[in-house]
Amino acid sequence: MLVQTSKGRALRVTGHLLILGVSLLLAACASLPARETATPQPTTPSPVNSAAPSTNGWWRPPIGATWQWQLEDLPIDRSIAADVYDIDLFDNDAAAVAA
Image 1: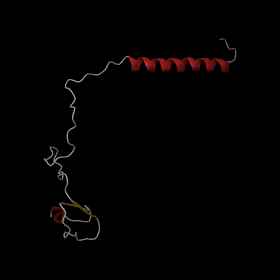
Image 2: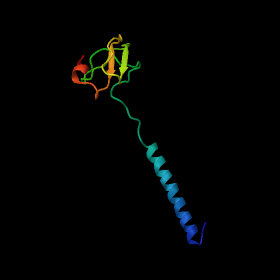
Image 3: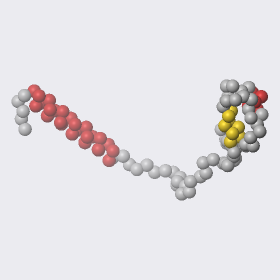
Image 4: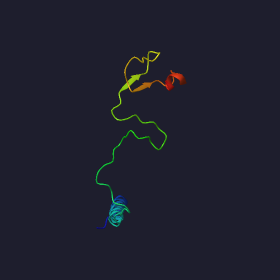
């Protein structure tokens, strides 16, 4: 197909570049070998959260712990029977956090 106009030539070159780009992309994806792992993957998922202490230093509450979320109305209402209190860090002092 010969086109005499510059617009036609530009379209032809653009089409060839597009075909070349898609071909290179497909060739690159098809030539990648499958990655093999050294150890087999576990078939059963491990538990996400446990009561055991974490290794990174962050405290994690045990599964099933009850929560009290209080971000306002100081002082903290400790009459609610909860295992964990979530309080505002900026409006409470270190003594309230430690309690």
